[in-house]
Image (cartoon, rainbow, N blue to C red; front, side):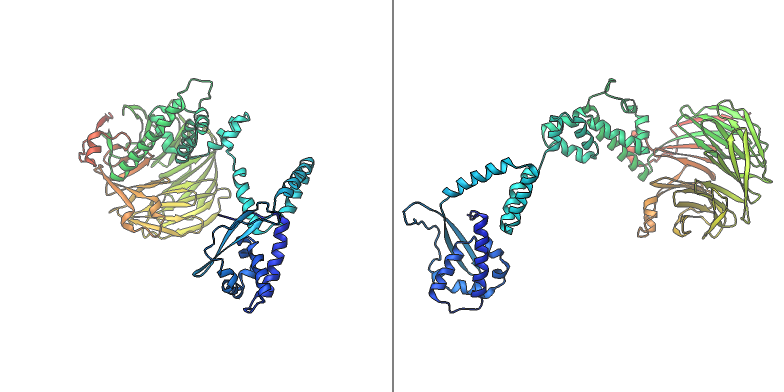
Length: 595
């Protein structure tokens, strides 16, 4: 049993006595019997935790040894409870203390004085305390605490701790503040939200009525393209981003929907790793020439540029050719479109701007002396590059109002590809170099050297540049310092096209293969080279010219005059059960023959 806490004034007196006792006690093994007896009484009247907490006594090993050797102490060994009466035979409370030091044990007791006066004095103090202001009460308690010992502080801390713990999630709705409780819990992830539901019925009610599973799914859809894509493809997007006044499913619907989404995501990731996919093929046969040099797609259409000088627009669902745009007198080597226009570059040295809906030619830019090999446009700025070794920077006020801002010269061979953002323009050339230019000033910044042969493709985003070369390798660069972070090897011929996102790099080469690489592993210098290539996809029978991909699919074009759609979401059951795509026959094929 622990000793009851003595009053604060007694503690101060006892602490002083212990210090005096220690000073006179240390090192003296031949004490006067009267002093010995008084010392023992003093020690017995002090709680063990108090005198052990006194640094002077605790550090005086000699004093402790002397205490053990006292005859008066030894005679008290094995004593459990002692009862005594004062002079008038009134009953007194007795408390037992046990001290240990080595093999011996000392049990001592002290008599607690009558509490009659204490109760009266306590009542008086409380009456005065209640009359004071809150600030005065706090100041008074601080003074009391400052006069207490560490042992008492511990008791006070144990007493206050449960008082300071508040179930605010339960308390807030009781004050009419449900929305604050909901807002706090809305920041939890799925695992924490599951745990919160199990705390109590009130927490579960706040989560259910606050539709927090719905809010969690909405947050993931806003921030993760994979979640957004699944919401669109699986049609549960229509139940999101609606207020409570409209008819929406209950919280239980979203609670059960969440694990299904996680299962879909895990399945998609496994399909990417294992190469499981459904394949769709568009045959772009032409009497004049073979080859689909460039493409871009969205959910509704695929727009491709062909070697036969035409631009073909395909329905992505039916794979039918919707429209053919003609006007270039050379192969269409590059293109990009947005919701208003299609911009194309050709081996006829021109850049043409088309209305994306009508197919009408809106503008023709004549500047480059040789084939326009690549182009990019965004936010009123366009950059084109050419076989004539130059880079042209254009201001696009409107589709019909495009003016040349600057020509960048520095490469010693054809400039095969460009990319840019608000900070840098990045270009790659057959001269084996990548050059970095300032977007705002068009001034040269630095050169990235490392490839052993000409560079055919490149993508730039944030600080990362990924390039592919005719030396058959892929390199990852830090654009700010110019360092090569990793070299990826595996293709057997020129790497013609490359794209990356937050997870993967996808590359296509003249060996007819498409390779999927783990981007995060490639950025980790500790990752073995053998773990970087996740999968090699082989379906094209000719050189792979261009590809684009998202979380669910790859769409690629080739010299074999085909466009392939590699679908990692809608994988047929027989392919999933076999664990691989053994058959090479596509699930759906549409052939368009131009005349």
